[in-house]
Image (cartoon, rainbow, N blue to C red; front, side, top):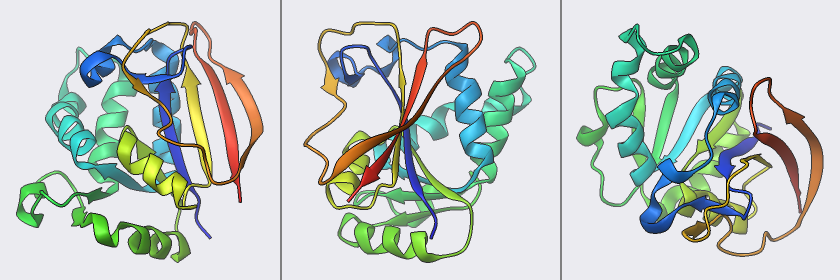
Amino acid sequence: MRKLIVCNIVSLDGFFSGPGGDVMVMPFDDGFSDYNAERLRAADTLLLGRTSYEAFRSYWPVIAEDESQPAVEREISRLNAAIEKVVVSNGLKPDEVEGWGPTRVVRRADAHAEVATLKKRPGLEILVFGSHLLWNDLLANGLVDELHFMIGAGVVGEGVRAFETRPPGSLRLLDTRTFNGSSLLLARYAVER
């Protein structure tokens, strides 16, 4: 069975984003992109909510050919374009996701069944970036296998907390990791049911 892995940055004080949902206040540094590229290489499906999908689509496509961008950012752009993207949204129509690689829309009411089906199919990992409401819902409903949090050396103070509710089971630490030249600490947890 394939794993569904949620991978996100969180502040030292446990926020997913700052006031007004501003993700740019998060403590990003070089380790963030390095790990995201690593995760994308190990996945063949990217599961996104509408807001994250639209933000990614507005940012990533042009990066692949931008020589002023670091090589890892250009690689992430290419990987994002190539990977199958499943967008959970009631508002997006299928024709609104055309033109950025293989992408399809799943309605919220069908999301749990779709994710369960995806997990049973052969393939690589299913990855969730961003998509705060989506991954919290999937976690509460027992569909997330691992949480990979990159904990940054920054205190946001207010904003959107990482967790909307307690997970239905316990979390078991798999490992921790640091990155050269980075202040991020990666903490990987298995979600035990």
